[in-house]
Amino acid sequence: MAGRVPEGRVVRGARLGRLAAGQAVRGAGARLAMIGRTEEARRRLAQRSAMQAAQQLVAVLGSMKGAAMKLGQMLSVLDLDLVPEEHRAMFREKLAELRDRAPAVEFADMRRVIEADLGPLARVFADFDEMPVAAASIGQVYRARLRDGRMVAVKVKYPGVDAAVHADMRNLEMLSGLLRAFLPSAGDHSVLAEISRNIGGELDYLGEAATQHRIAARYRGHPFLTVPGSVLEHCAPHVLVTDYVDGRPFDDIRSLPAADRDRIGEIIYRFYITPLFTHYEFCGDPHPGNILLAADGRVAFVDFGLYNHMAPADVEFERTGLRTACELRADDLHRHWAARGILDPVADVTPQDCLDYVWAATGWHFLDEPLTITPELATAAVIMAVDPRTTEFRGLRSQLLPPEHVFSRRADLLTFATLGQLHTTANWHHLAREWLYHEPPVTEIGCATAEWEAGTQARGKVAPKAATTS
Image (cartoon, rainbow, N blue to C red; front, side, top):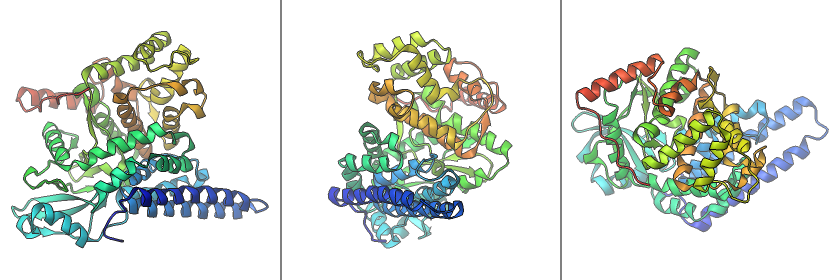
């Protein structure tokens, strides 16, 4: 492909507009073509239409990178109504290419980015594999060996991606139209504003390097998970160098036996959900492309460009609201939200509306029984949370969630969607009670983790809690 990402607002907006229009025309054409055909012919036509839509989406969003590509990555973990049910798994697999096999930028172009920051490759690296091992929304990842012998992953920004992301931020209406073409209930301007605003943080590679260095130190020696450390002396504004994880991708994890997937599902939950309530910070980008199964059996987590902090008071507001919903105290939940200004004073929203809405979106934390998470279950929660206007919760269309809470709710929903891809089973309420009520763990993984944490604290090796911001 060409060496630079399309940067201009007009160019990128035109591409998005053509893509959204193309999906609308394709959908109408496919419906008309269904008339009078046999079931077998309809099935084949639906399959062909679904794959054409997915291929176009991957080609256009993959070439654009930035916020547009991040949108495709998010769609890949949902169970979309865009295509017939029997073809949705195939459609998601094609979209998953935006996580793991997105169109690559030629190495000659990426090399210029590396050397502009670090100088000649041979000065830093003894070996450098020119074939990328991953392609993400902001940059490509390569495998290399430092001159001291360490194997590292080198994430390099696409040429021109900074300007492209800023163009996307100014192009919310086009992005909204595109999302509405695939998931009508989520095309709200505020949803896209949240995505574009936060993806700008992924451009700060030096900030990401510092965050990853700190989080890797926190989990060093953990019995169940690992975070590769960043090599700070070789990180720069456009190049991020971290320890290399020799691991199996998420698609391999999906093929494991149910007991293994259940074990990994609990580890994923503990990494993405629990830290908000224990350290007042969380990873805001849970998706399958950021999860690997390391050779030593631990689950490895990568990509810390969207790592957020919350003020303790805001976290406690969330904890109190969730606890109130868990205990079915509808009136208290309604008062809790009204006092924070989340409910429009003139909106006709009852306490039961509030309670039902929270249970629909986050009830997986509250249900005290084993629950198998599926893509269908997770997608329903995402749709109801993102845009209640298309569901039985229309009265909540005027909810005014404060900005500091939007991203944490997104992280919760995307963790749910990621676990749905594993069809993993657990009593999630047992895990949630640790952060909802500060109760001790009851699972084998939880007890072993608590024992490790106690030992780490006794040895004085725990990284301090992050400073928080409101």
